[in-house]
Amino acid sequence: MYFYTYMLDERFEIISLASAIATVSVIPSVLVSGWLVQKLGKKRLMLCVMASYILCFAVRLFNVTSIPLICVSALINGFPQGIFNVMMPTIQADNIDYVEFKTNWRAEGGISSLDSFVAKASQGIGGAIGGYVLAATGYVANQPQTDLAKFGIAFNTLLMPIIMLSIGLFVFGFGYNLSPEKLAEVNETLHQRREAKNSTP
Image 1 (cartoon, rainbow, N blue to C red):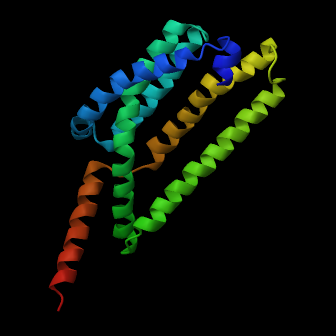
Image 2 (image 1 turned 90 degrees about the vertical axis):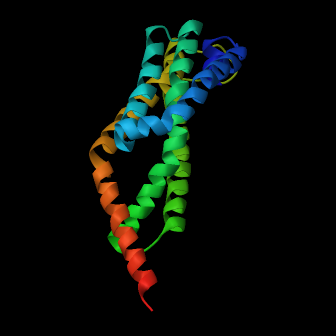
Image 3 (image 1 turned 180 degrees about the horizontal axis):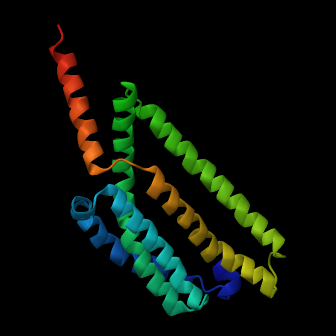
């Protein structure tokens, strides 16, 4: 809203236009997400999704206030967004299985709660960082902004997501090691444990 208010002179209709364009590419991405998982694997596909998000923000750096670039960015954004929304619950389910594999303890509630906590904490921290950037660049509400304040708004809108997504790409790329082979081992081990448990009188 800061961006559309002060950078685009309150052209809020562009928000609706960008959302509609993103929806056009969300739908097919949801439909092909299962096929892409089979072809690429979950980790590789998630890395591609994060790289696509970075691309959709980077495209807009050529001209921050360009309406056509906002529309192109929305079109690029929609495809990984659909895949991301499908992928996250399946990755969380894999994490639950992996924790059971390592600890022999099923912890759906704990992992779901941790996921929810991390999401809410991230939103709070992200909002605070955005506020600090606006304050540091001299933003003052309800009046024309200085060039530095506009830079702060553009930084929050485009550069900050690129920075955070790049960090996430690095962390996920090196820290998440549940390959298809490892998941197959996890699932087979859990199946054997359950079979043994069920056969025990």
